[in-house]
Length: 118
Length: 114
Image 1 (cartoon, rainbow over the protein chains, first blue to last red):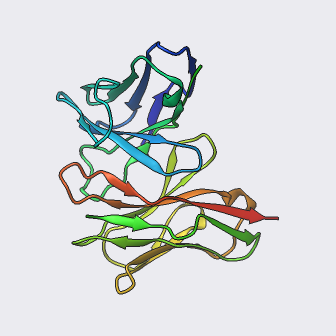
Image 2: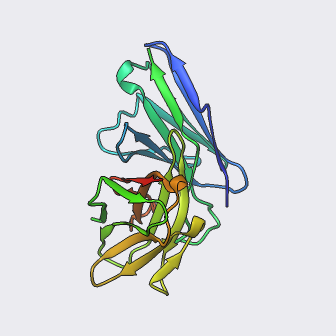
């Protein structure tokens, strides 16, 4: 199947600093990528939909200025957690679908990023 | 609005026994349904999907799922569980809106005991 690469897999940062997470589709192009957050033993919460060449669409309750999303190309989306605080510590996962895939094609997921803010 | 429900937080089965992980859905039109598996500290891996056609869908690692329209269910099954099947399983439905985002259930933790 298609591969989505997410980097880094694990990051520890100090409170107040910013962290950038990259999501790349390696063998397909994606006009849309999705960013999720997952708390321990809980389901995935969709944070935002990243759209290539345009602004991201954020879910209700997600701070746009806190979680900056950039989708500069058909194979790369980035999520930047700005001024991180301990409550931002979580597991972040991206996913993407092949833009040439059928409407029913499945989404592929990155490996996830474990963010710990100390 | 579309939704999926996974009524069991955890399922325990003995190795070699059949397993079932339950999922029910609610959609206004024809559902696109998916099952994903997540191992600890990893992303989600696609197992199988139902779009149309045969109600019994076969997927990766010997898993299958049965689409039941009358019961609005899409239960995941495997005839003989392995210890390595122990993981977190998510059922999802494709949102009918423009973004086609996935709407996930709350997940079911499968524990296969030796």
